[in-house]
Image 1 (tube, rainbow, N blue to C red):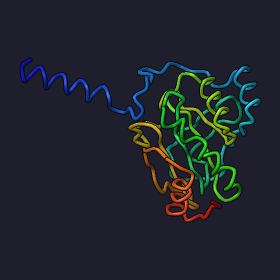
Image 2: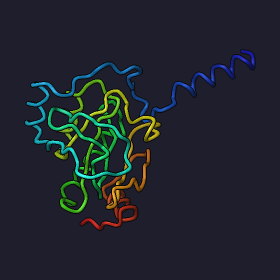
Image 3: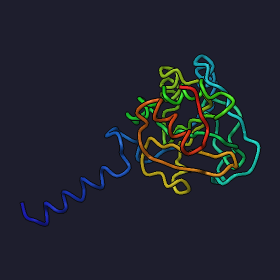
Length: 199
């Protein structure tokens, strides 16, 4: 094979991996996905997932309103307050699946001190996302961004992602990496948001 052909093959391989952190089959072109149907509402209720809240005050998150996954009030990101941890996930993302229990543990242990909000990102299968949440024990609120509205504002380059919102309502950090333990997530909250959560 010529040098040019080898170079072309390498470029195609790199291009095909861009934005993939899990090697899964991420949807290429999202269609309009309904995330609030009677069936999804029932599935959400069975899983015990909390309803979304619209938020209360201005901050520096993008001016985007996301529907609540499985029904409930839409979430205006410009009205959310911190300290808050926002987890960008999708059911097709392998690393996202493994870290959801750590966010649930944070939600359970940090109640009243730090909020947790999940965003099902670029996912055309809301029922599968709710099923994953239930299997993972997730009960914190889940919003949905099936069309990738946050892509440019948050410079989403792959999943999973974490956005930390401080007490003043400002984005303190945005990271795209896997959280490998509750201790790691707890340490991130302590170091970035300056909130101590029980071990």
